[in-house]
Amino acid sequence: MIVVVTPNFLLAALTLREASDMTTRVTVALATIAIALFALLVPTSPAHAVGPDPATDLMTITRLESTTMAEFQHARVAAEPAWLDWTNDGCSTPSPIGLGDTGRSFNFRAACQRHDFGYRNLKSYDHRFGAHQWNAANRLRVDTMLLADMRADCGPRSILQRYNCRAWADVYYRAVRIAGGP
Image (cartoon, rainbow, N blue to C red; front, side, top):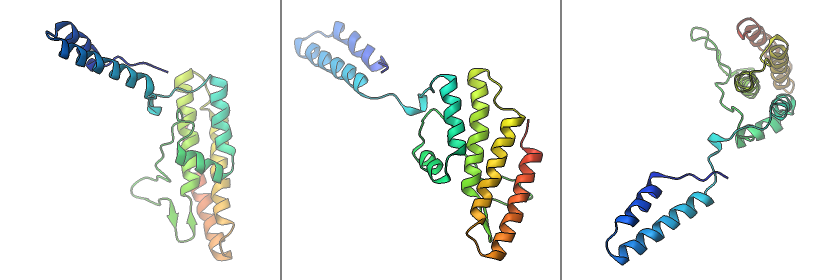
């Protein structure tokens, strides 16, 4: 647990010395104690959470990239573990193309959310630990999972929609392989 000494705490401590009457001194002392207790009892913000050691961090990223979509979505909605980057922009495509997450025969939103998770967290891992996990092999693994997730969305659709859905999945997959990077 981290104890934060706030400007209010310091101001209260300084004011205690300068207080002239006993009532003011007692009030300031009680306020100082209340602020200190509050600082001890309030947990730190998850936005400042730091991940575990590099091996555990990488194992967590890899597990969430390959778990079931339902388990991944549960973790994403809860933003747990908090030290990971859960932001996403869905199936982003350049403005003139603008395909987006969904179409008449497909809904790739969840697949793209997991894909963004993989890209962002492997890049973040490299930045935090000076590692080289954002590489061609791991990028291929994340992109291949995107294709599998998109095809899983196609599975329960009608035959005609399934055919169109798989064709769109292949288009999206080729696009990330061409433009996704390193």
